Length: 157
Image 1 (tube, rainbow, N blue to C red):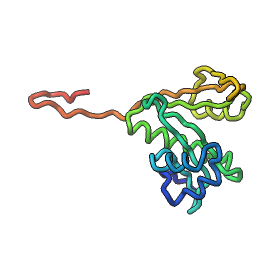
Image 2: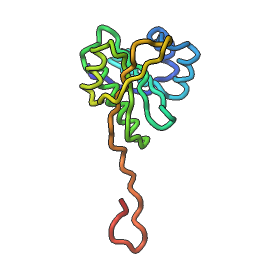
Image 3: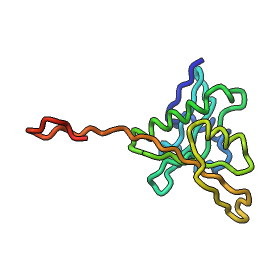
């Protein structure tokens, strides 16, 4: 069955609250209101989500991607990333960012398979002793064509 990826709406709140347990219910509501959730739909049911934010308010940062267990390894996660990348490209982004803990080889390999490259690691002391590995992916932003000035023979780049 084909996967559709959409921006999550209020009708996805209860489903998100049962699956996104890394943040408080209040923060789920904030992210939902900000349009920072994408949901993968198969048939009529949500099967996965991607939550993102903005690093330095300029770089889209994938905070979490989660696919229901029975739908893993079927392309749902890659569909979520592709839709997020397209949406960020439309907003003019030229770089995407994400991260994974250093002791999680499968998620790190998945990021790499989806075009992300290692960019460094940080530790956070008592908050998180295991290093967090950061990944970036360069993307081409959607070209914005400028109108051709009057009297010019060639359009502006």
